Length: 105
Image 1 (cartoon, helix red, strand yellow):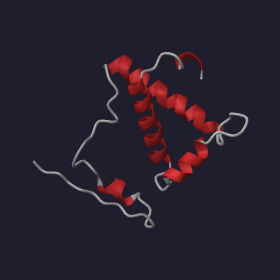
Image 2 (cartoon, one colour):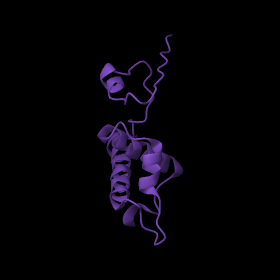
Image 3 (cartoon, one colour):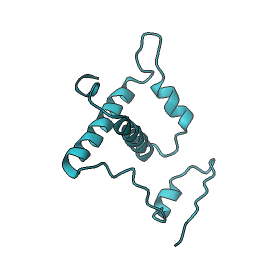
Image 4 (cartoon, one colour):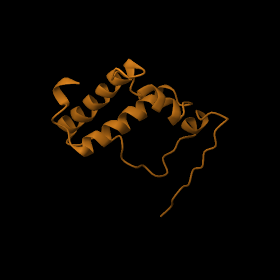
């Protein structure tokens, strides 16, 4: 983990987790949280069950820090009510249920 390990805030850590999970969902939308937890589990030697996940997490951290440096803040975690697209809904596996609540002012 190198250059970022002692320089990130709790908020940046949280946003990094969001970015990481968002990227994983965009790549494999049918995956369950149990699958993700299995991949990021640590083995007895301290290594990740899926070593690529650690690299992907570092990339997510880099995205958060770059957005903060370039735009002043990371915005992909901003809540956007009412902007759920039908394309995204159709990507959800038929074996899972999804409830969408639209809030109108």
